[in-house]
Image (tube, rainbow, N blue to C red; front, side, top):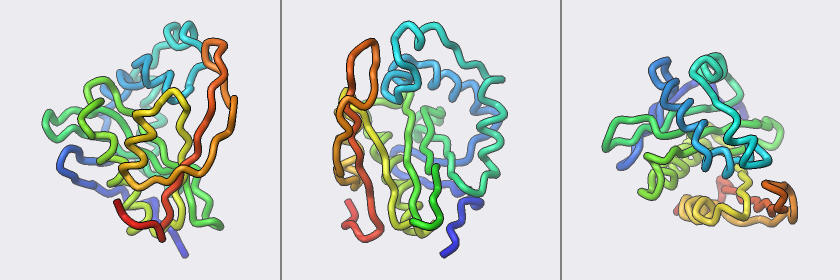
Length: 190
């Protein structure tokens, strides 16, 4: 089966709209990437000091985000808060494996988008699209043990816990477990 990642949809829910990134979104997504909590939850850094020392500017993200608007092996969508119209994060299907009909899912939500169910809805919208429209069989993710809110959001969106890779990462000298979850096309819908 051929999986179409070239078509970049607009997916609309009650709380969020997922759409392709535009040039005007770059300052907002750069701000999300500079949020210390995003850096910690994604383990983009291995220490608070590294996280606080780095700064991502608009020019740092321009090429990456605009290139991905035409990528044929991944889907990167801006998460727009329907209440405010602001870009509050991104939802991504990446690491596509055509032989297994699978990919990875990742999400970033900045401070303005947390605690209101936006991440859960965005997760459900993009993974439903991946399973139902793109035709994937499996979408997997990993979540670190210090992110129980993320794990709950993934479970609400239909992801099933698969296992734990113990002491998989280190942040500020502390060993962190990594949990694996997935949604299959054959799983019941949330």
